[in-house]
Length: 110
Length: 116
Image (cartoon, rainbow over the protein chains, first blue to last red):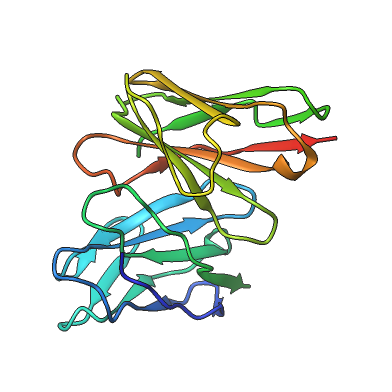
């Protein structure tokens, strides 16, 4: 599976958009990009995934660059409850093998 | 989203005893369930993958005789930590997926195991 690189930590003001970047320069053509988050001492939560088109759901938007080497997860109006570790994962095609890296710790501040 | 439960949420046991952790998909049929382990301040590590009615597939370095996995139905998988030792103390998390996308997984709340 493709290696992903994320910043270790980020801060965001409550009510503002949180933009979390992810580099996946070795991603292959059929590998999707998945985003999960883990709030402290809980199980991870699926957020969104995409292949090459931008995606949006009730939780977030996913912007994937045209060359697919990077992506950005956008939380449009961050709240304190969005404070969590966010993981960007590019697993081998539909194998279920999610390799969790260190992720980005997002701290939403009032 | 789909709901996955785990029981117990935490357990304390003596060294040498066995502990069973249950993982249930409450509102969907999970063709595949996954077990992860997470040590403090570390990320999740996949331990094994189990499909209903068949033997689990373990990741490299995970002892299959120590971590027994049973996936007897489409809604229940169990992980038994046999002869637990203090180094097995960890946060154990299961996840479940349907047949449409194995990469879209729904996670349980986790079980905190402490071995004394």
